[in-house]
Image (cartoon, rainbow, N blue to C red; front, side):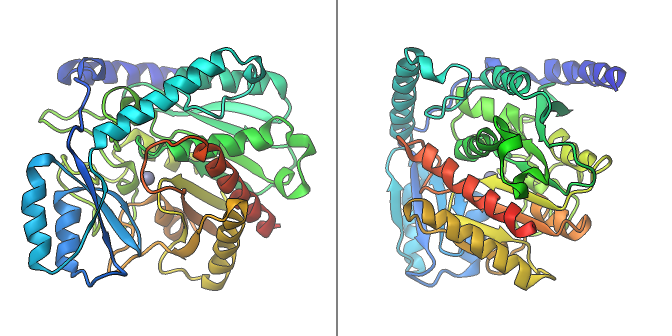
Length: 411
Ligand SMILES: [Zn+2]
């Protein structure tokens, strides 16, 4: 195993030196960029318009209710005319994306300054700010030291930048405990998903042995950041970076991990163009991040899988589900307990919207290829990716409530 990693590290170093390093990239500015929202309930939006948006624009959020997409300052006039020709009204949810990024930076640096003075946070994760990868390494080590019986930390895989994809395994070591796999941070810019998975981890890891039976009788595999390179890049260079950081020789980089699984690979909803944010990659499982998930199945059978994304306030199950009543019952329950936290409206729905289904997505690969009985997507709260005050902790509470509900429903 170690020898294999050394060999891979060598290959990776070769690739990176050929096409440049992330550290040398310019910081991307979104000055004057806007986010537009089309609401499916307010007017009829033909499929060809949705297709064009999917093909041409960076879609930030989409479900059965709305589609949000990004427009550069030079594109707004043309898109206004285009939508006008279909009689489609739109809402501008953000007039200047860079201003939002600046506000977010200010909020986070202000929080960090205060936290530096606060002795209470030592030893625990700081749930008022987003951790960097190096913060998390220390955190995981503390978790393990505190609770060596229940906590195991493994490197589930390495990215093609040689970054560890860390998996925390929690169990009380009973035989034949059903295993549950949770991942967050599959898309770099979705910081709330990372935060929410960490929040759940924190809520059960420190006192695992005194958790209720429905938590203790499972074996939990938790990957808070499946795409660590994309996450770091979104923190340092490009706030809206979503894909992994695989370098290609042209002007665009990265593969969408959630289009790279071997199920209806590169079908609808994915793109064969490298510059697209939903680029499916050169082959099924061409990416280290998706193949890390695949390889876990060589050692472990999973009874449940939940992938946490941002944003849209949804719990979704695979389409078409062969166990529709079970999936609806469990996801309805998950959405209900999420609503119960502070009243935010969460809805359970099939993953499909309109004519599309999830090409190359992890949730479909788990259910249709691996027969994982419970395979769900959680889309966290909020109307965009940006951090606003105490919303992060509320999101953590909501996701933790949903995961606890699912574990309880499994028995
Ligand atoms: Zn996502």
